[in-house]
Image (cartoon, rainbow, N blue to C red; front, side):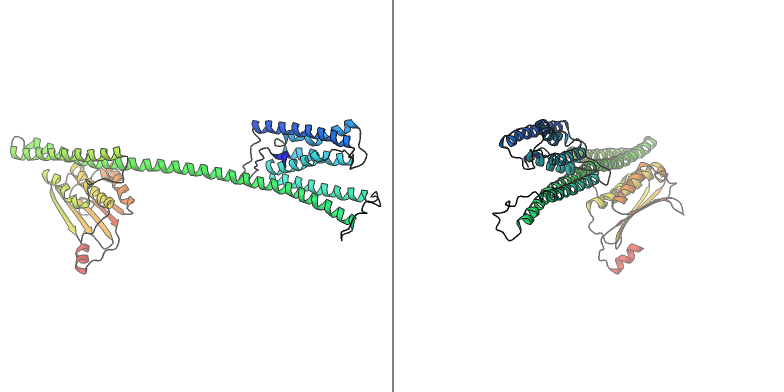
Length: 439
């Protein structure tokens, strides 16, 4: 209706404890203007009604009292969204008393009553209490309607229904019509408020869900950044630690034999040069990936398990006895898994060179029926990796990323073992190959 063209959006205290904030300053100003405008219209309509001599409720009271009731019913709309339940109670009480006093202005007063009831349903903080208050007001209004009809039956003129021609007795038709119209109007005001409340609650829930989604998106972004940082840290550790360790061992060997065996020293220096070039190439590859802003595509230079044997060249140049074996039938591997296996071998060789004090290292790649097994053993004393260094952390992260298992520790017969198992899709194998792989 025209009286409720303000922004009648709602909320309530929800089961999770949320209560809608009061109206904004702009909404309060709008209510003030609406309340003053409706009051002015009510006074203007009162002037027209008294000028036309339309007194449907009987002889009117004095003019000041007429003005008072017109203002009492309409002016509270100026604060309808600030105190919705109080305004509804005040307007309802003033409406009934005004009818008892036969105040002639009832058109704007009726609209004010229904608007206040709608606002109570739409804006009351305690929605359950609002329902109870509105239900009580409706019951009181219908009760007053019945009482007023009962009191006015005896005063109905005998010729009031002389033009009636319908099948329903005229008095009964009048009573039913009055009750039906009031029920429909009060029902509309009640359920309009309920609808506004439901819409506001859904809006609040959508806002909460949107905030949760935003936080989840931020968390996923932060997690992705952290994963990328860990990946870069692992790559830097693997590249730098391995090649620098090899260069350090070879430099020490070259220094010891520089005077006694220049040829061997030259060979060691050439190996250092090659290790340095390889390390620089891998660092450039990583920097190129960072510039592209992605870590999913590592390009054609990606290392894989098929290149693992080359990692033992540095160990051989450093004077270790290095053995490498592949057992079972090689199968195509995902690039990420193949690279993870390569890094396991690389870190094992690096640890042996840096910490183990070993003379031999044995690396074996086993293609089993449902697993890829990477094992590196030496005859040294073990090293810091077993105590939780960065190398062990990187290996555990790589293995865990592929749902594999990692065993790291000393062997009963002496030395150190690193064994990683990566699950594979089942591959058809012949019995002989299976037996060889198990062996």
